[in-house]
Image (cartoon, rainbow, N blue to C red; front, side):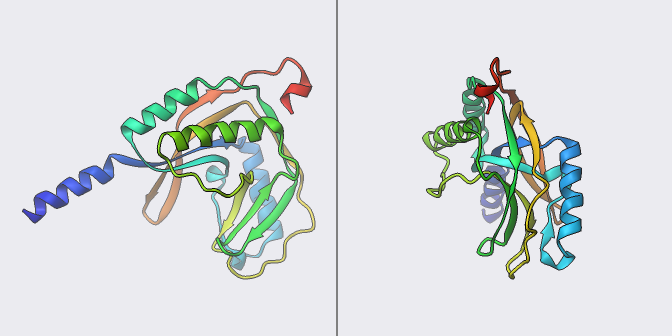
Length: 196
């Protein structure tokens, strides 16, 4: 009897996936960030995020069933918004969560709108959304709970957000890997003022 219950619980758990919407970073930008991080932070500062895992989270969804994931993907597919440029020109440290990050001093309107739309859709679908304001950032290091000397400035790396993606977070063999489940394009802007 106990084994039957255990199998059911394992089956239910495996039917849920840990998901989030995010902007992927171009490969050359990922490599530039990793090099900049290595040049500016000692190894003891925290656990570095692998280059392939660098991204800018738009909406964290948590553990999501297959049915709910399908609904969220259908909603995402209906989003019609222009792409935008993102400049990573800010750096910070959240000691409470142990995160060192690169972010945007002045996030583009399109980024804020896309994140708000995805977070609203997620909340309406039953995915808890933090009441904290959206702070666009790319996590560089985790486990940075001690004071860390932050560089005076960043490289002001920029990239064009031409699509957004649904990611799955998979923990295996002691490592976390982020896999893209699906992606959707952001429309080309006809006027540059609409893109920023």
